[in-house]
Image (cartoon, rainbow, N blue to C red; front, side, top):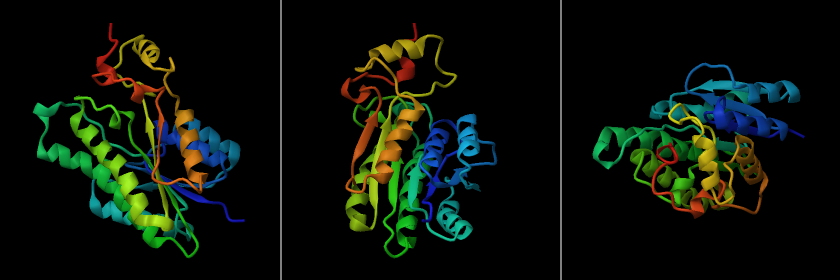
Length: 254
């Protein structure tokens, strides 16, 4: 039996690496996209060594429409078949509230966080072979259910991708399944101060923040859930149930 092939954008680092590692353990062959040449995070390199999963790297700048259009054909040519699974994980993030919003900034955010995933999904479904019904999983953000004023361009783009999930599920019908995972705060950046993550965890309804592995669990489920389409799984410790008012980085700093 031929192993399934997954294309994971932004698949070498952080949450993307955890998703790719889980798919390797699920038996997938991996097409791992990255913006530039880089070594995978240890969680992924360890999984590849442990499983022996076949993987290839694909470099593409998803802010460029021509490189978006070329990615799925490049993967199909390299493996001799169209991916069975697309995980739209790559994302662009930027600070800024509404006074700082510019047309150029919003356009850049929408291109990478919305337009690229939608066009990759289109390309995947258009190239799918006879009898092949690919699965598409969009990585959105828990804030789509509880909007905050921070990082407004990012929030707008992720909300657009969230809506696109249901629209594409209807549009593709039986030709493809389209779902989303909405993570909460998972891995800190340098913007977080010591102890802040622990204090934020206590604010969650579940009293804990999600781990990359738990997000990967949700992706793996949606990849094989043949009766599920147009759905979003929130993996966020319950954050989408409790309005925070601001982005996490602005909370519990003291």
